Image (cartoon, rainbow over all chains, first blue to last red):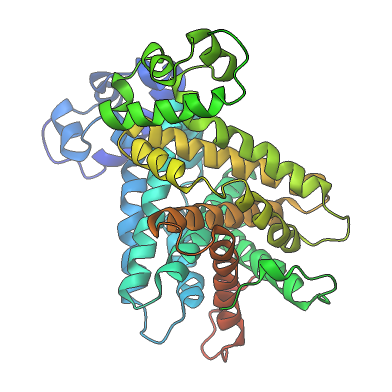
Length: 204
Length: 204
């Protein structure tokens, strides 16, 4: 007790997820989590601010990780090349953690407050990516919409990966998602422009 | 009092927005709103379930309106054509209401609970659009990612329109946003594929 526990963080996470699933997020206390993990509350608070943080620690790291991926990438890359390059690296942060993410999703979906918090975390991810794009000199509007599109892909791909029980690699679902959007745009601009609505195509 | 008031809804909305801005959302009661509007609380409850509904009544209509736009469109349209066609119609629902939307945004941004609720409403919009796409026979993954992209465009365009004080028409910002995403994909796939990362391009 009190000694440095190299796997303490993971044991606390697993204990917390188990207990949240068994008793409901609201009914679990930090001492119950540490008892299940065989660790002290002091150790818990070295790793997490509160029990909610156990669920959102990853979500808090994603904006920082994503911004770094964008900012550290070679100078000549276009916005979508940054996305295509960054998504597999983001995906690798989730590899091998399917069961944990499934449990986490079940807990979050069972609690309105947690679902809303999850949405805000995704919003912060959008903002972080857009800010990193702007820092690379990408114009505001492109930065904003490409960041939204990227996080849309991350959300859809993560959900699909978890729901399909990891049948396809997360990375493949992300690339596939990106290609679907691209194809949808191809269909738009390749079709004959019969009856085209002038008002919907402003000058660029 | 109690009689049918043709402009009651709008008067209640305006009174509520004024009071929320003056005193903070949490500190305003329904009787205060009706007093300011010169109407009865009975009239209020004919239009809104509670004071929060005044802020989210539009947000509740958007999923229904969007789904109808998708489902009623000609059969041969591709997903992105549906989006290109639907966005101007969605934009027209906001025309002439810039001041009201600016006030609403200020109120929502000042309150964490309202911000989270706004995010959930946007999430419901994504789900409604994706469901309408699927009903048209569009595959799940395309439906999901194109719906996310669409709502990303709506969010970014509305924010930009409000922040720029309506300098450009909302509809033009939406089309512009869509074109920026499309251009970003063009840049990706037109570039020479030197050093292409094989893992990020799965078979489709």
